[in-house]
Length: 122
Image: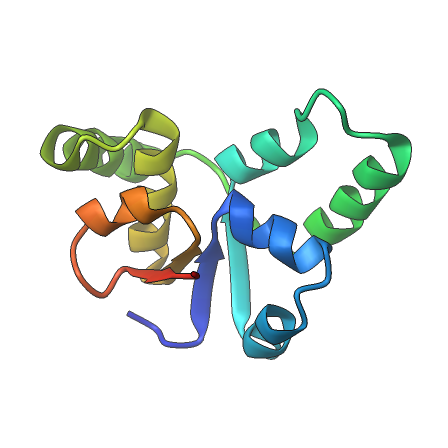
């Protein structure tokens, strides 16, 4: 896994957008990506206002979004079968593996995935 390459889970993006200084500093000068699942989750909150949408869209303009592909789909199926992750989480984990990136998350469910893939923010 490339130590400078990170796929950010939705909860981490929300921490960044809320100004978590320690997290922003840690991720500075790193190669950051998100899954298309995270894009959907960010933009689909029912109570999001226009300012929130603008903030998210500015973030999305700066971070590559990894779209679904057959390799990610097959890996997500295997991860779900093996670990019992929910489908969106399995897709996010498979996207990180596809990129040879580490996954930054605050979701402890990802502990079900192999060691070394995830960094869990507490």
